[in-house]
Image 1 (tube, rainbow, N blue to C red):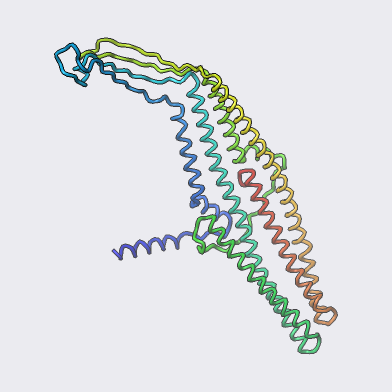
Image 2 (cartoon, rainbow, N blue to C red; image 1 turned 90 degrees about the vertical axis):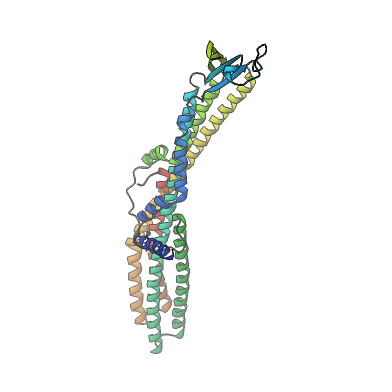
Length: 415
């Protein structure tokens, strides 16, 4: 059977090779996570299971059948004891159906329905949280990838500076200290590049962990960040958060469940019933029919009052938990909106003003250094300013993406 195993292995490898590698953009990671993440799948199945509990919660309990054999010893008759219904004194069959008091079945169904909706909202919350983590990790993955490329570019620039410094030192135009400083800067940049490559590898592993892929599974190089949308007014976002946030939806459904359960506890003041139909068999025929009505007597009032107080306390607790969560989420939204606006302004400032100024300053310093008008420290600082301005822009762009991911997590949908 080795040929069969080889064929199956080849088929699996071919299918894996045909599957596109995620990672080029955040959408590819989200699609993969939605299809393959087992935690999200488990939450969906739990929500499906909770939905199937609604109908049984309000259904009538199964009826019971009771069989009573009378005079199984056949006393006074010339017959031996027997357990056959036709060979005893009489046999009574009682079919009993329990009937909850009016409205209890609807209340039980309401509790189960609210719990099912809470489970569905929890599944949605699980996906929204997972999507936010994927978006955040992708933005950091992009930052690390672009940072590595930028550091390599600056390292080449420092290498060119070192070559210029060596040439000028050989011509006796600059002191040896300039050559040494250029080499130190070159070594420091190479060391920093190693650290950034290690961070990129860690982010690669983190994304694979979120996608439930092997640690070393390949990821495509990140191509671009998502475009930042034009956000509606803060008041509109706050209204969307209250309406759409899945965590709040879970709490609302929990409040609805405990409120309905409180009504059910109050309804327990009234008795439940059981109706029965009882034919009595004598030998081979039915001799008589009987009907039965049974009800429980709710006499333990102290116990029921305690249960009612407990139910009211549970309602108050659920409402307080919902209100606290809403206040916390609204505060988080406000902070993220402020941080997003600051990141956007920082990015624009760095891109439109700081970077052009830094590049002009570097070219001017390089020309002045070649003419012996400025020292190497000024040139080195100008080179560092270019790198800082580019990293500041990249950091601001990524920070905006992180804040956008948090806002979308709070809102419960993509913007």
